[in-house]
Length: 142
Image (cartoon, rainbow, N blue to C red; front, top):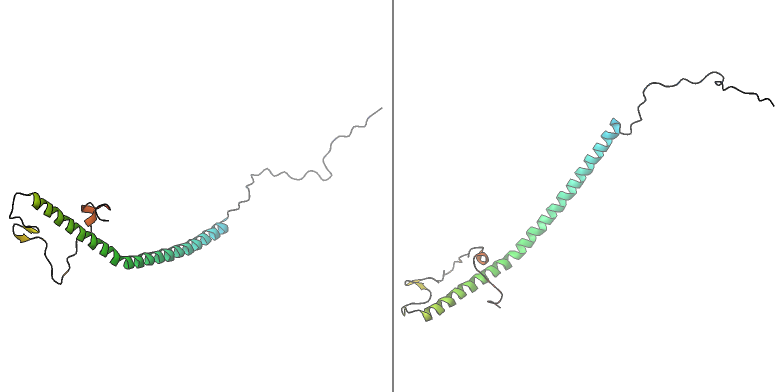
């Protein structure tokens, strides 16, 4: 049996031209798209900055409003603590005068000058950090 061999030949008209030149991939990020994304992100950032500023101003207003509402109560508590401290100091001085050998000791005076006095119609504001310089505990003042 004889076999007819058939040789591979180019297609009729020849092969198409082969591209030997270097080819670059198609880029997604072209100049127009980059510019569009930058403009969009800039606009979104401005929107977020305005919203954040509005939220911070609202929060600051609420904090200031709360501070204005709480200030009288905080001052009253500070003054109450100050008066308790003065009473405690006077009580300590009374105890000290009882055990002292000096019979001329008068409570509330410093060599005859009164330490505790009334300011008539004026109020003397105690220092703001009374609690920081003195030790107060809940056991002393129920």
